[in-house]
Length: 271
Image (tube, helix red, strand yellow):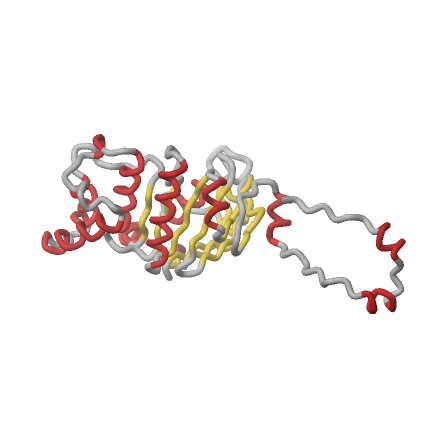
């Protein structure tokens, strides 16, 4: 569904790559967190996926589209297949909630009858069925975030990218937004979320890809935690060895004395 293979990106006048030999494969219907400190390369990676930027080297494929053969005139078609929730939301202040959600459908020429069928369903999905006639400035931060998610889902994309969707929200509202994204994922949409919110990541226990200085330093396939330290990220990827219950008969024949066992170094586990 999403493939970056040895992707490297330099910006003009920069000697250090913002993305350095990145390889990531995200399967259809996965829910993935992309985490890292500011300046780690998360935003640049997202811009590669939406074709706002091109890599200097490497291959990118999204939804079966090979970006090596993607012509400029086809980029709008690509973006219609992606749902993107921007960090600054980009809601139209002079349009109602209904009109904001309908806007991307109008752009691609969807009929008015289809818009009238689609928009109420999407607003109901995000819990805003009674807010269609409101303007963005009359909504709470969490409600505006839900409008942005509804707008990104209006075209029923197979992939939804959410850039810091809980950045300015309190913990309770943030949890509600993530549960909404989880529900959308349950319908079969692939979800990629960039975030600094360690609490949300640790609660969700999904796949977590950690990026630092343009490099992937950790990829926890399941039950992931928010680790920015490279050593901890690598430890988190390795499953702990199962320890068998002590067996006195085996211990007596193993040649390991109690004295040896006591002198064995204790393993320190970083949590």
